[in-house]
Image (cartoon, rainbow, N blue to C red; front, side, top):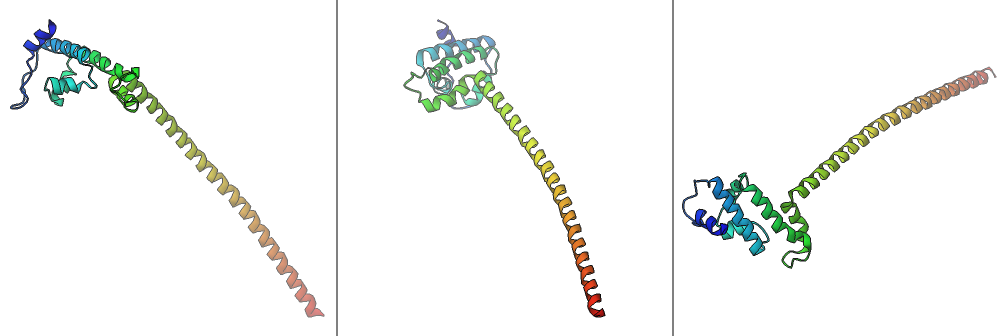
Length: 180
């Protein structure tokens, strides 16, 4: 009976012509929501757009306004769950396994929020790890550079000492040869 009243109050809009400029009353939004839920139960749609676009001839822009209306929203959530169940049960012949996972995020907002939070946490952890690894690499590079520099200085000092010793020996040999 509520469906008949909803159809009387919320008439199927004309599919073309001038855009609608009048919003529905709170009571009309409740009746529209009830009609949507009953239609979903009776027609087993794959997506709610089958109801609002094909059955009711509403535009996506109008639909976005409907789902933000607090009187309509509880019915919208219920219809989402009715449609979404077929994406979970695995027995639906209409829904393929591969697409089922994707649409679960659409019909189950809590799942979407949880997955998004998990992804955000994972990205944050990976960023922290990358920052830490970069810091360690910079410290490592600096330490290696200091060690290499110290070794180089020591080697240079030894070479200079060896050259100096070699020159001293050569001069000494030259002096002894000239005396002889």
